[in-house]
Length: 253
Length: 118
Image (cartoon, rainbow over all chains, first blue to last red; front, side, top):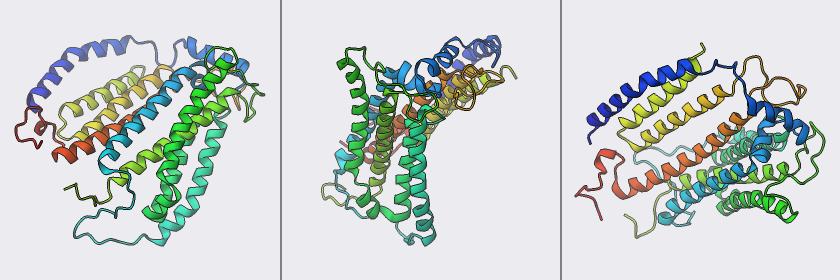
């Protein structure tokens, strides 16, 4: 099917479905003024039953904790998929020189970039850890904090260059962090099984409301997610970065 | 005003799908997929919105203050993380494809293409 036929089919489908979408939109409940029974239930019970002030984290790590476990493994699968796909051909060598475009001069990294990233990277990492640690009380959590930590690691590459980055952030450490995070989350579930409770039951002391260390088992799950997300995103970045290195193996090209 | 959030979501879906249908490059197609995904964020957040309510975080406001729906927000969080990693997986597939076939134009990548290399 060529592009024109595809577009015609798309327009035909849209012409058929479009009016239905318009009718549907006009008959939906009033925006922002309809009942939210599930949300109200969680908002009511999260501070009372789970002693956490962030209801979103309560949903993610407790009420629907098993969904997040599934998401953890989806993350693990996607990262593993990328690693297997890209490394199967490239191998695990990390000493290849940088690829470069012919006839484009190689400029040295400016001192300003190094200076700014040296100041910003630790601050960003600290900020990411803060966001992750306060996930049960204020906006944040393992997913958001993990991504910020990963971007701090990325800044090290930006400021120090490939070789120093690889030396200070070896791939195997982040592969391990990614896997360990997912395992830690799963172990939380098995720990409650060992305690004779249903899977992922929050059996640890819940702490006091508005305290950083409130939420019991959620805190450990949150730590697992932080590890997995920070590790996973760093691995992803590292794998794509390796693709820009020149192939030096003989069986290629 | 009442229909605007839903219309934005439907519009994003339509734009993304149009881009995917007319796409001539797989990286462009993955970008369009992200636009389609963005429509689900808008839809979910709009479904859980409530006027004159706070975010579902009861740190500075006492529990019991009217708040928006935390369930859809948790869903969007999941959606974003999975979306980002799946995008990475798709880009890795595209990289491999480019290494093997030397092109990323879907029209030149038909399964029955005779001039494919091994």
